[in-house]
Length: 44
Image 1 (cartoon, rainbow, N blue to C red):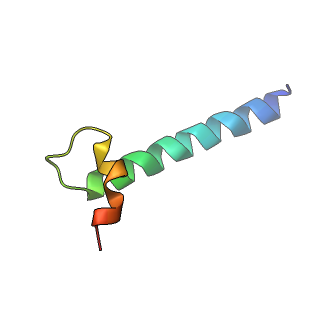
Image 2: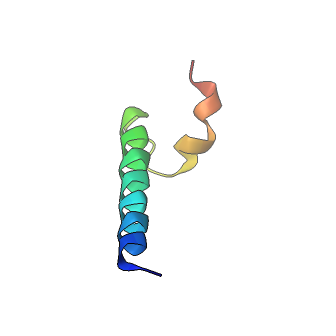
């Protein structure tokens, strides 16, 4: 694996992590667990 590919992979992981936390922060603050993701369909 080349260095450029590895850096791209790490950047992708970071982006996904940031996006995941952004979604979590928009949910109810009471829900600290990942269950908020599973109950996403209950939101309008």
